[in-house]
Length: 342
Image 1 (tube, rainbow, N blue to C red):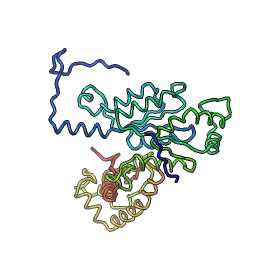
Image 2 (cartoon, helix red, strand yellow):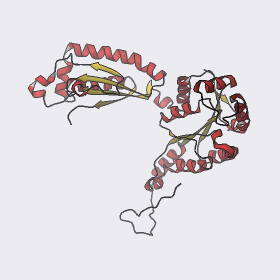
Image 3 (spheres, rainbow, N blue to C red):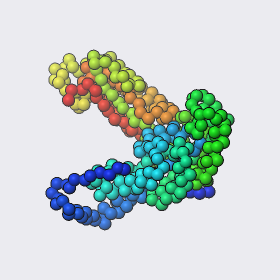
Image 4 (cartoon, rainbow, N blue to C red):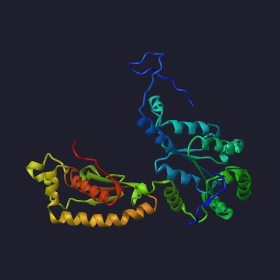
């Protein structure tokens, strides 16, 4: 995987109604303690804007999706004149006053800006310098060799955004000239010639994802342990399905009939069978083998489904137990029960 190159440079209005208990025309004053002010200042300093730009066909769309899966607020092809306004919104959205006005909190955002902007693209260098003064901003310039770009356009059978009548190779040359100054202002220049989609995704997530504070093996993939009843059908979104109807059914124990697999007595009843422990150990071993490979291939979420007859006892216990085991192994996991009585 080629290393990144470090370059030399670096509304609508809304009518507000007075809140309950406030007198119209009187401005409310918010008093914050010094600790609250420090917390707000830290939040503002943690704000981040990533601007992805570069040559058409270099993978900007894939890079955008990779950061969106990391929790970035993603915008593709925002009108360039609105970029400073958007940066200001990101910067101020932490402030409690902004939240009171109905603005959503945005910790980090990513925007794609490229030749689709047309003539206004020449304003980008000036706007970038202005935005960088407002909040922490990183500019990523994606590039690839001409031969690779031409091949990618040929494979997708899409025209180059600069011209439908010119040859792709000629349009690429013109685009390079248009983006030359932007390239010089970029913080990171990434050559994607040798990348496939998964490798580019992995690079972007490694660069902009959680660092040492959240370096768990599956911190970027959500694993859902889902319980269900076969009598209601197999979940359509299940990636892996395990049938646990080989275990004795607590439904036939009168005191357990109205309970669920979340009840400690029911869970102990199911767990005490030797085949339960053996099954859980084997499935856990298999998942600990599979999950890192799913993460490596760029999978954002995985649903592991456990099914019993009604989705009330055995499958619920299994989903709960597996979520605990995978959580201890460092994966981001949640237990979901589709058919369990509420």
